[in-house]
Length: 234
Image 1 (tube, rainbow, N blue to C red):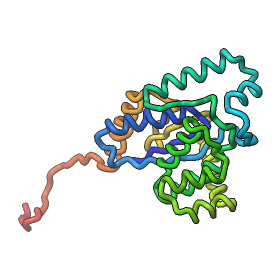
Image 2 (image 1 turned 180 degrees about the horizontal axis):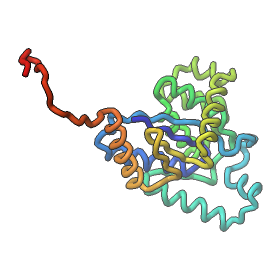
Image 3 (image 1 turned 90 degrees about the horizontal axis):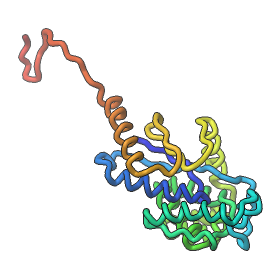
Image 4 (image 1 turned 135 degrees about the vertical axis):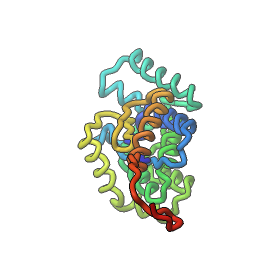
């Protein structure tokens, strides 16, 4: 059964949603038959990287948000993250365009390492305060998850995997994705946002039930004249 997840590294609720989904997946008895793929979604494609500025400073400037409003947003994410063992450090985040990080995820996907790439990038952005648009950081992330340095460098110094990022964004638009995280189960059920673990588990079970029916159709048998495997005919 296939599950597609649209996400952006700059989205704290994508990091939380990833862990809530994975917690549900661990409780799902058919987890070994689930194939998860990550898809690119840019929250602010025109964002200009400025490592001297934090995401919070950028929000304050562009959205005209007060310190109180920013505190409310960050505290909600911090509290939810703590429940999942995540340590958000919003004050030290680096304002960075995520396009190149998405290209790294696309490269990782060709090696079935996209889940690992997502996790590593979330961690360096939200917990370690590193610039996810910095080539040395992306190279470090790529090597940490098992990608070959030469493959990462080729991607970083060319436009490799740019087309794949754009295709993911177009697919998101075609199915009406307006925000992330966005989960599509078996091309039938969609879950938007960092939902409770129980909600993800409920959709996993429902999707599996329909997936199993589609792949193992119920046969209505009427007995008639036939020959059995032993050659006996009646």
